[in-house]
Image 1 (tube, rainbow, N blue to C red):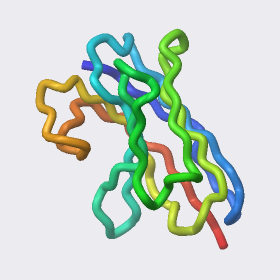
Image 2 (cartoon, rainbow, N blue to C red; image 1 turned 30 degrees about the horizontal axis):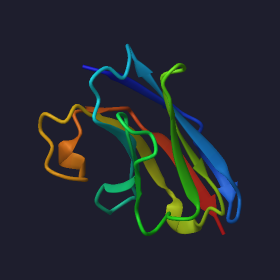
Image 3 (tube, helix red, strand yellow; image 1 turned 45 degrees about the horizontal axis):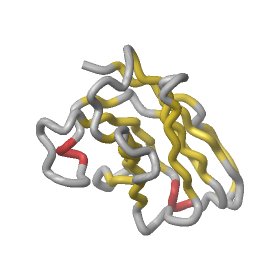
Length: 126
């Protein structure tokens, strides 16, 4: 199993930026996808951004964040980062890093992901 540790959350005003980072240990190994999900109070967990560990140019974004968020993976540093620009109050949520081995792959959804971090809070005020 992988250990995932998020950092970089915080509070910002609308229009501001934050960068989340996820440290993966011991290594990416045979990971199929890594990515970020979020859960706002009273809402279901939703996919934010995913990146293929086998093809770092293959990325998926939710419609809500497309054009504002950028996911990247550094195999040397063993990190998966989420650069968030032009943040909106609707982005307020707990953000979770996740990794999928591919063994239980059922598509781009949370059920496909095997390992999860503890989460980091992002709060955007208007």
